[in-house]
Length: 263
Image 1 (cartoon, one colour):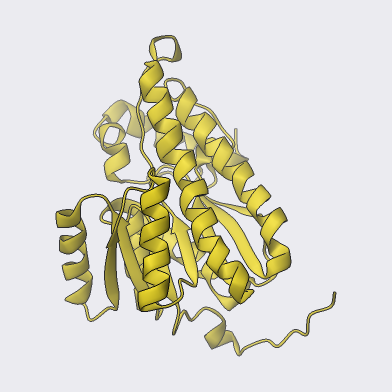
Image 2 (cartoon, helix red, strand yellow; image 1 turned 135 degrees about the vertical axis):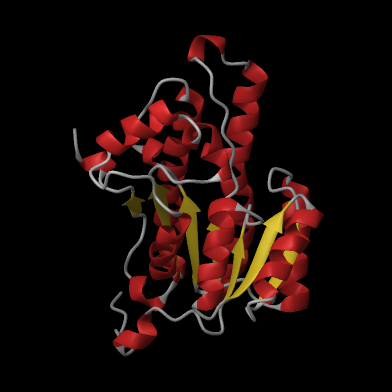
């Protein structure tokens, strides 16, 4: 099926004006930085998390910058809560045009000592949430024949490092789930892609950032020679959320200072 291509002027391709973007795990770190950047690009952002106090604080900070923001508190691991919250929002407040699946966690310890219950929690938080929220939002998008889903993968989607084998497994799953979502849903007009951050200075990486030995190793290992700043992920997210990427599907975009391309 050939679809007519009606390109917008270059300065409009990356606008998110009139769009609503739900971002899971967005009260801090990468999720919050993406929320701010997408709101600055014109979107109404819907912050999500389990902690209502943190959400309110994050929303107040964006509101003080005259950005359009709402909150939608739910636990993304709870499918019933996910469905009731998103279906309720769609009915009461309107369409979710963009979904960013950002919720995630990390736990570091040698694989031979890794607690089984923590492995299960990691899978639930990093993978099941992408399925839960992705499927629920996609059902609405499919009806509209339009929608953007951006999953947050990782440099560990492609690489492994000692002490985080289960995390590596979860992010490999996110990468492949992204490809599967695109394969199933592209025919309905959806674009599903992933951003794979390298090493960024975030709360999730606080222990590594505070470790001089690790930082020295990272600076030598990364061609860019430094940690990433969370604001440097915003452009990639806007690209994958905007009309600039209407024929990009199932792609994993590494934003990593070159670490995955060098030895």
